[in-house]
Length: 536
Image (cartoon, rainbow, N blue to C red; front, side, top):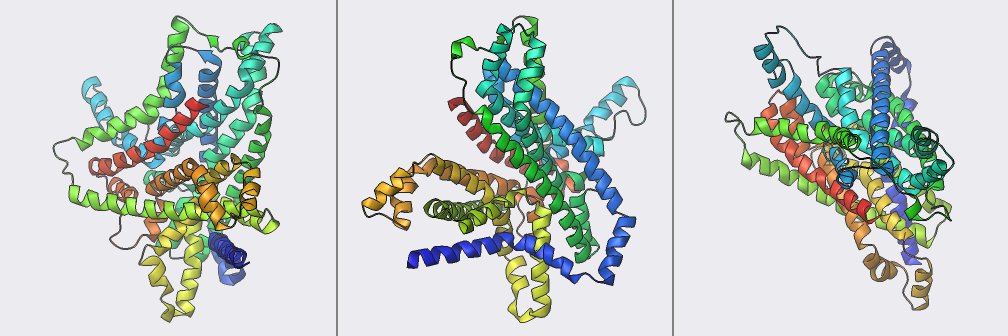
């Protein structure tokens, strides 16, 4: 009985911690007065139309780019057999290892007016003035996000197509349908829910981004939130913008969930059709090599070239590498990532175990609430946490709440947990789905229950899932920029923050070292995904 009471208290505290940012934003509307109305009216007349139109056009461009690129690559490696197919199946995931803001730094250094590309053209071709479109623009941001985020669509669409597409296309071929009709009428409709889910995930990442929009000078909602709070010192305006952004993101989350629920029809393999009868279409000769070249382009522009553009200035003789400071940045990043991963896995285990033992309404709602955290942009979490801290500091200054949550790493880790507990929860729950419930009944009959069951029965079976959860949270924390940029304590810079600050100061050669370190860390979940794809 005492165990159940302790577990209920812990779950209630977790629900409060995770929901505080959203609750604080909702509570900010309670301060509505004539001054707040005037601020919001001025925003509607000045900056809000800019934020809305820019964010809308950015989302439309990214949605079109990731859907076309991700779907075409998924259909190619799934439905056709060509030279290098097995390599491209996992290599097309490599751009996922590079944060979008790192891709932006790399391409800016190479394609800007004073960069190597335009200098080479002006010197050798005798052209004067600008000879290449400005990379720091809305169009440049669309390209950067497309290259960095298309793996979301590729991964989900490939999973959906690999289950049944080849079998149904074989059936359509036997009925006399030509190849183009099989692709357009059979394969693509089959992958439509997966494409919608992948696009929704990519758009959530786009709206949550701060590094690319700030570095390119694009007036998106996220950049507007930070400008309202940190530059204009207007917490009401920041709260209202964060509320609007949260509504949009929750709408995208519902689209993604609805699309995911429609993907269940693609899980079962149709009976009566053997695997030998449904083989990918073999492309030979020039057609096969042309497809291989086409599949290599996203890897080239999304992974190889950005790394090459960063390595070149890093190796330049005039760039001094501050190894002692770099080790400090890396230690801060590793420390925050490891501690957050440990806490997030503990939260995920507690919630998943409680839901398995007692799947009541309270446990379900708490688990769903924690699962929403990953969809909440970092800018919204920052504003949602700073609002109650500011209020407490004003009305209860002797509590020193502001000090403990902003001058130490406590507030930063809190924000990380709100944002990334969902990642650990999803991985742990997938591990629990593979453990039969009958095993719990057998354990109780043998006298093992409560936390002893978690320790002695579930933990050994969840080792791989827990390790994957810790790895994913660790990598996400290492790459997180907006939350770290605002909530980090003094003299606690991380690799992501230093890379952003150096790139913003046009010291792109020095920014290459922390950026490449983030890429190396980002390769870990890509390797994990590629291994799981080979086993599937």
